Length: 502
Image (cartoon, rainbow, N blue to C red; front, side, top):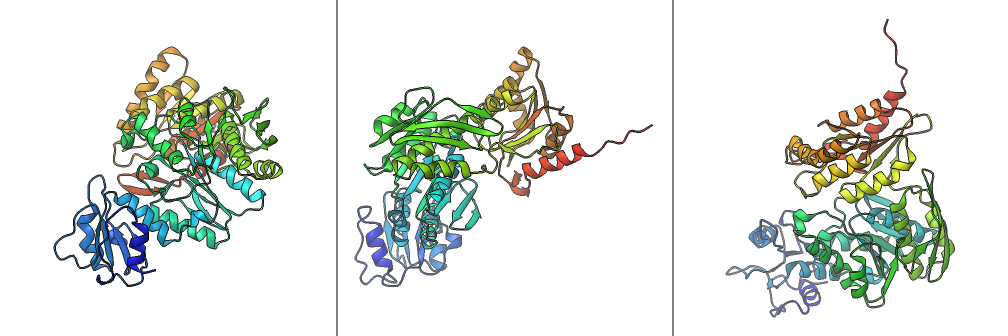
C-alpha cells in the first residue's frame, strides 16, 4: 500500500486531500501509522495528536527527520513542509481510521465483543473467551491483565491501547487463526476514539460507578463516554445491558438491539435461585434460547452479573448452549479477582482482589462477610487519580469490615501519607458508630504481613486495590510488587512454628 492510497482511503470524508500524485514520497510504500514522534520508523504516516499538555504537531519535524513520509494534523502545515501534510478536524478519528485501513480492517474478519463498564469488565472478558474456546473458536483477548494472541500472552500496558496498537493486535490474532476477539473497552479509549474504526459484533455494559472523574470531570460525561460503545455498534449487533444499574434504562433506549440482563428487575437474561459459597456458584440462567445450567468456580454475587452478561452475549451470537455451560465451568478463575491465595494448610482465608473503587470494594466485602468469622481489609487509593472516591472507600471499608488497614496503593507522585489521611476521613464517622479497628500502615508489604500475622483462626483477609498488578508506582518509578507473592510469604511465615522463650 502506498502513502497516497492509505491517505485517500483512511481519510475519506475527513479531509480535502491535495493532489498526491506528484507529492514527495507519496508513491512510496507505507510501513505503518505512528502517533509518537519518538517511535517513528522510516515509511510511516505520523498523526499528530493533541494531548492534555502538548500538541503532537510540535514534534512533526522530529517525526519527519526519523523517516515519516506524511503528517496528519489538526494544525496547518509550516511553510515548505517537506512531506504531504494533511489537515483534519479530528486527528484521533483520523488515527483510528488510518490504522484500521493499514491493517486491512481485521475486525471485519472475526466477531469482536466489546465490554465496558466500571467494574466486571475483566472477569466478563475471561468468561467470554472461555466460552468461545469451549465452542471450538480460538479467541483473542485485550484487557487490563493481558493481551492474548492465540497461544501467546503479553502483559497489558493499557486496558485499551491506542488505535494502531489495537489494530495491530487484531491483525496478529487473525494471523494466529483466532476466530473471535473479546476486548475490554475503557472509558478513556472511547472518549479518545481508540476503537472508532472497529466493527463490533456485540457490546456489554456491566455497570457505572464513581471512577476516573479526574479525566471525565463528571458522572454524566463518564456515562456518555461509556455509551459511545453502543453508538458504534452496527444495527444488528446485540447490546447486553445490566438493567439493574441506574444507567441501564438509558442505554436500553439508545441501543439498536438491546438485550437486558439482571437479578433484581425483570430481564431477558435472568438467574434462577442462587447457590453461593467460597467454592463457587451454581444456578440456572434463563435466556431467549433456553436455559443454561451454570457451575462456576467464581465467587460472589457480582460474578453472577458477569456470568449473565457472558451467557447473554454468546447465546445472542448463536454459540451452542452446551458450549456456554462448558466454558463457564472450565474457567478456574481470573488473576487478581477474588483470588484465594491461602490453602487448606492455613487457618485463615486470604483473598487478593483488584477492587479500587468504593462500589467494587462494597461488592467485595458483601461477598466476603457471610463467609468468615471476621473480615480484615487491607487497601489504599491510587495517587494522581480521582480523589473524590478516597473517603468513600474509607467509609465502605470501615462499615463492612471488622479490622481495616489503610495503606499505600500506587501513590505515584503524591505523598502516600496524605492519600491515607483522605481515605481515613471517610472511615472516621464509621469508627464512632460501630466496633471497627482502623489503622494506617504506609508500607504496603508491612501492612499485608501485619494483617496476616494478626488475623485469628476463621478470619478472611482481603487485600484490595492492585489485584493482578506486579508493580507499585512510587515517585514516578515502577517497583516490583505483587500482592499475591507478598500474601503467600506472609502465610508461610504464619505457618512456621513459633518458638517459646523461657
